[in-house]
Image (cartoon, rainbow, N blue to C red; front, top):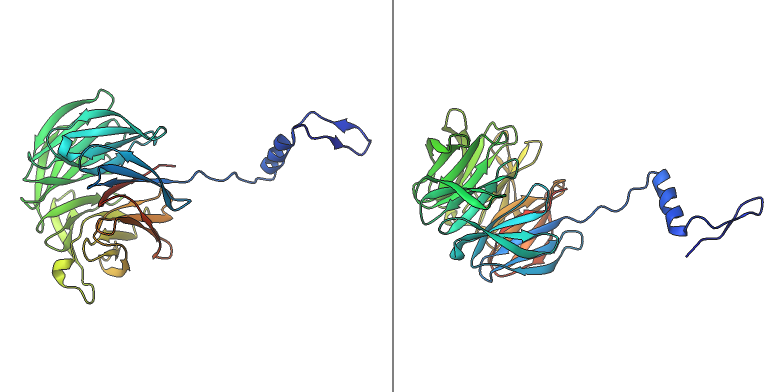
Length: 338
């Protein structure tokens, strides 16, 4: 509809639609349009789905059917595609985030569990739990480039900030394997505590933290010397030590805080990343497993397998502000980029 405006001289102006005029004024005044909501994509291990959670509405808005036993999940740097490990189908599935449908598969080798993207988004590094291998996949060509022998039951995959090293953890061998991404071979092995599940690099590349589910610790590794330089110990009042099982790890961008999911302890530990001391425990859902930040790091999302939900943590205030129901036994989580 045209807006009829009368100027001071009585001239009727019909050229500009009212909506365009309003937008122009808002732009001139520097009024920003509302930002698009971040989406969290959650793999549900037992009902073979991915839940799509709108983090503005704080609710699940879509459920995507995928292959059997989905666990590891990552999103492409441009946010257009998700890659999901369907472990019992021995494939990695590709989901188009616009159509929210599975559009293809990648060859993965047996039982893919957890995966990480190269910094360019061109390569996938994934762990084959049953075959003691790490497989490297060319995403564009949709083919496996090579397989690297590692320890028994490989899981965690962490890419260094410069993309030159990938750390894989082997649950039964109790090691962190340092893989040179150019040579595509293991260049160092570091013994850690029992059942290492996850590896996460600090943003400056100075440390790698490796969680030990059965050992109940996080080992701090010097990635140049390939030695453990410290261990983070957890103690939650009222809980037996066996209930404290560290898994997922994330760091704030400024490197000041580390967050560690503690499994059936139902807590996320807040750790001073400089002193390696625990500062706080946040009560979340049951059997907290993996973690992911929104790109602005306003929120940290945890997957809670037994309570079938995710917890939304306000990072600035270190407070859980919401739980959102998803599918059965949520495992992994990826969040849309900016």
